[in-house]
Image 1 (tube, rainbow, N blue to C red):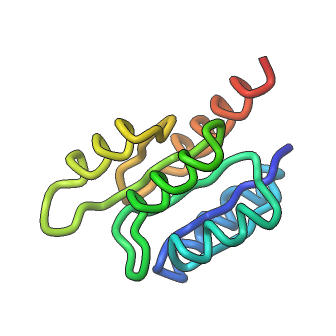
Image 2: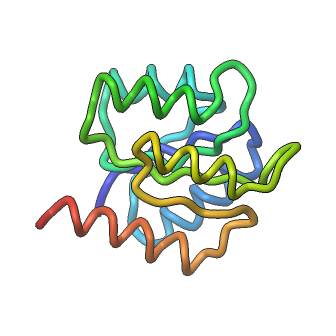
Length: 125
């Protein structure tokens, strides 16, 4: 169905997203931060990246900027539960930098799967 890279500094979030996506037939890789996510993508590009925005080392905003510069067609879903601010501010910034869609944590399973399917379907048309 497609290969997805999940980038989040929280292991339980990565695990939860992996289970949701694998149950729906996707192949999933994981990374704990933007640095590792970029390394994985450069080595073996996936069909879609789902990334948290607030992470140590390299946050999601920096990762989106770097990947979009190098790979303009990379498909990204940005997600955030907010930090010091409400998640909408972070998510709006991610969208302006090239994320196709945004999701607010906690992630709703049906919304996630529908969003992933929509983005990957757009890629095939």
